[in-house]
Image 1 (cartoon, rainbow, N blue to C red):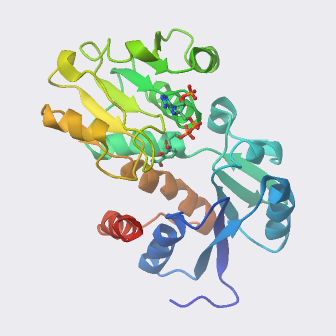
Image 2 (image 1 turned 45 degrees about the vertical axis):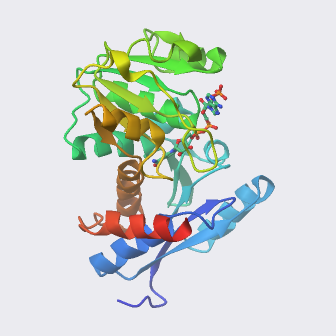
Length: 281
Ligand code: NDP
């Protein structure tokens, strides 16, 4: 249906924002759900983030997805912070509730849900997480919350990996970057949560020779969809899961929070996003 003056409004805020797939995804869900709603992109510098959010919420916006570089600042302006956002140290969802701002993080949920949609249950599994930035924090939190038996972290900067272990996973093994392939024969799942492999970045190279035949390789990167990390894993016959599922799944709880109904299980949402990614290439 076409929006009227009574439309529910929500959006995504970041800088840059033009590349964001969220408006396309949310608008497709709005259309499929047949609700009177609008989802809009907003750009804001770090300096303008708090006043823009405040003005939008005072103008009636139900909520905002938050992307780079504001995910940490989103916690600072919230009146209430969910356990996930607090532990991860970042929020990607702000909602306006009775004049208060509530902060949540749906990236961890999105990651776990994308694994389950691909038929991989993380409970009881041992996992190697590569990277120690924001994505790694969400992935590590999600894995332990979902019952992963243990999480090892490999990162270029060891102090950042130790920080995650201290905050989220006290018993985890920390590996140096050069040692990142050492556990491939022991773990059930390996996750690329670095920015390596992202368009314009160098690829992530692993020594797959020790990998067990049931190892699952998961990439959080989705531009491109087929990273070198995934291509190499698949070439060895391993199951590879790209980062687009995480993006789609993290959007679902946001849609529910903004518009009060579930995102329709629309089969062609992935296809729509793949086409958008291809048209940006
Ligand atoms: P950060 O900048 O916070 O972290 C980047 C990570 O990559 C760090 O661990 C960094 O190591 C590592 N890294 C960068 N360059 C190199 C290099 N040359 N060699 C080794 N390690 C390197 O980014 P985020 O954690 O926020 O995002 C990481 C990726 O996650 C993004 O590129 C994005 O594609 C993906 N992502 C996907 C989502 C989805 O929905 N699918 C959601 C959020 C993120 P160091 O600490 O040493 O600097």
